[in-house]
Every structure is written in structure tokens, then in C-alpha cells.
Image (tube, rainbow, N blue to C red; front, side):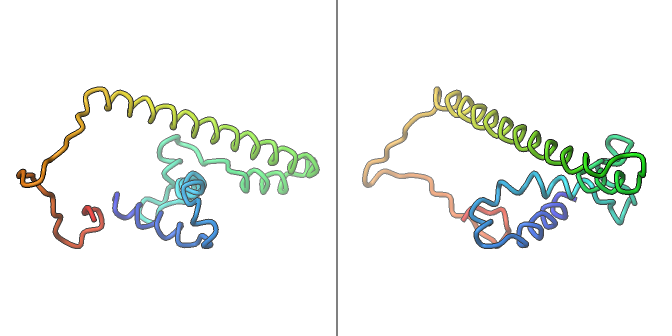
Length: 139
């Protein structure tokens, strides 16, 4: 299942333009949202629906429901969607900052006990030479 989901994510990333590929990591949350929103052919349910027992209300579904509902003014919907998009961008920026801070803290924690190893010419060392064409092998 993991390989299949990674394959799907790779296919989504292939849809990016060369300029967008320079910052491909920025698009992953959007791709994951889309992936979690779409029903699976195997289960008939989206991953979000199986987890939360309800369908996700993304920007497009909100806009569609307001278009279908005559009692809600269509003029308010784009404003709501723009505000939601702005909030999501702010949350993603905050989450990104938190992740960077967490990673820096983990690096400091690791570096406390890390040793800088220096080898001298003629000294025996162990060298890792990966074999095989597997995707996750070290290159």
C-alpha cells in the first residue's frame, strides 16, 4: 500500500512544470489533500471519509454546495474561499516554521553525542557499497 501511495504521489509530482519542480515540496500538502479527498477504487471511500466518518469539504465542494443552494449569496462565497485560502497559507507557513525549529532541535540533540571521525592514510575503514537497482538503495 505504501508503494502504491508513493507511486500516486510521484505521478502527481510529474504534473508540475519545470519551474514548479524547483520547489516541489511546496505542492505536497495540496497533492495529499487531493489524494485524501478522492474515493479509492478498492474501498469506495476516500481516506478522509474512512478516518473521520464524513466527506471532506474542500474549496471546490464548498463552492459547489453554495452554487446549488439558492438561499446563500454567491457573492459571499469567493470572499470566504479567499479567506480560507489565506488562513490555510498562514497555517502551512506556521507548520513549516515549526518543522524547521523541530528539525534544528533534533540536530542539536544528535550532535551532542556525535563524534567527528577522522581516518589516516593506510588505516582500515568499513565502506558501504550498496547493490541492486531498488529505488530506496543508497546511491
